[in-house]
Image (cartoon, rainbow, N blue to C red; front, top):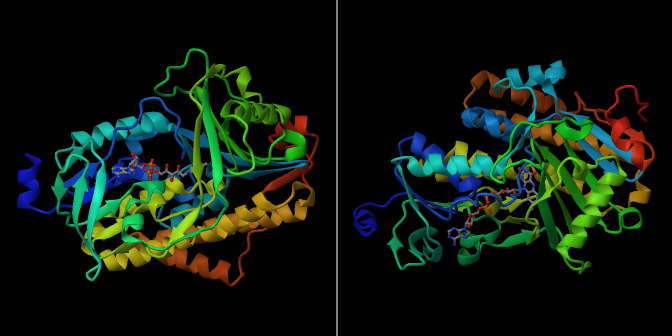
Amino acid sequence: MYQELFARESIPVIIGTGITGMAISRTLSQKKIKHVAIGTPPHPSRPKLGESINGEGSLDLAELFPEFNQYYFPKKNIVFYTGKLVARCDLDTSKNSIFAAFFKLTGFKVFNHLFHVDRIGFDLTLFQSITQNEHCLFLERKVTDIVYDRDRDKISELVLDDGLKIRPSFVFDATNYVRLLPKKLEIPCYFSSEPQRIIFTHYRSPDSQLCCSDRPSQTESWSHSTNLLKLCQDLDGIKGMAWCIPLGDYVSVGMSISAEKYDLSDRDAIALLDRAYKRRGIDYRQYYTQETEIISVCNQYFKHERAGGTNWLLAGGTYSQVWFPTGSGVATSLYTARFADRFLTSPQKMCQQYEHFMSQFWPSHNVHDRIISSDIESFTSQKMYHWTDSLLTTTVLRICTYAQSRNHKLGGLFAKFIKFLMESKIVKIEFFCKILESNLEQQTEEIHTERSTYL
Ligand SMILES: Cc1cc2nc3c(=O)[nH]c(=O)nc-3n(C[C@H](O)[C@H](O)[C@H](O)COP(=O)(O)OP(=O)(O)OC[C@H]3O[C@@H](n4cnc5c(N)ncnc54)[C@H](O)[C@@H]3O)c2cc1C
């Protein structure tokens, strides 16, 4: 049956049905463009990465997937624990009239805060919706080979694991760290971090179902924050970068450590992580007693020389990946999804625009790289203010670029103006985050208390 279809016409193909591939499929279906999506259905309960979403990603989720509201949880701030010093960056736009005005004037829908996303529930529902659409032909297969015409920079054929051959009109590679096309096409790749071992899991409240999340039954001060922690050898017994993301009736925790330095088991690593958060007043095990699978993967951050060719695109994390505390992975997926139909009609122009957008994540990556590679003893409040202000500045500049590439004419002009003011340093972000110094066990309580004395 498929053989006949593929012999008759050549249509766009998406390789990989993670969030990137699924979001692209959804746009193509909405535009009534017939396409093939090749991959596997989402796992019904396994923890996933990509749960704390940055500014652009949250704006896009609210706009592109409004009916998925039940999977969104408020991310009102980011708290960053670094030894004696702890920083809080408020992202609750409903409490900040400048932020609210900025989003409105740059053409975004007004929204109140960023999101944490229950990716298990979100991905399962999205998968159902895309595969039920008449414009999408889902094949539960793997692409095993690619026929590439180097002279024309064009993919002429995809070969699947069952021998089926497809002549695609366009290929979206959404295989993420597998990097299927770039490896086959030999696109140069530049790595920008040491190899990392990522260990992560979910803890669930006692009566929680494994498939999805309900609204939270209790609210701790930290339950609306992305809680980042710089793990320190002397204090925590391990060096690395960790996260704790509350998601209703479960909490997502994990860490990124050097892939070469430690040979401890995943379970022992997670035990160190639990103790590190408890030491700082985040005792998630008290509420979330149910253990789930612990997952361990290897990862490294990178960028390819180019994002696309005559009839192909490296979508989201397949093209480039930056340090995870930027919370940018899902945003890069949604960018390619938003413009999926335009990549088909103007590949060259859209590819340039996309490469420019993606390049704007690198200043944030570099700041995080400095934070992660610096010794905690060298941290001062001045450095922390400098880093957090730089992160926020690059975020606002990126959102301005994004606003310009969308269709809002007035919004785009306003964004251009703000960008000019910031790049020429007429307008600066200074001392935006709150930073305090305190004993570890008091840090969580104090950083969420408005009365605290900040540095
Ligand atoms: C430690 C860490 C923390 C992160 N935290 C965040 C965060 O808080 N917020 C955020 O926005 N992002 C985060 N990210 C990034 C985020 O996880 C990714 O950007 C996102 O999950 C990528 O989704 P995807 O659909 O592109 O890839 P995936 O979910 O990996 O999907 C790729 C799919 O391609 C399929 N595939 C592979 N090869 C083939 C083939 N040959 N044929 C067919 N199918 C194939 C796979 O089976 C898979 O289903 C984090 C990343 C890391 C490493």
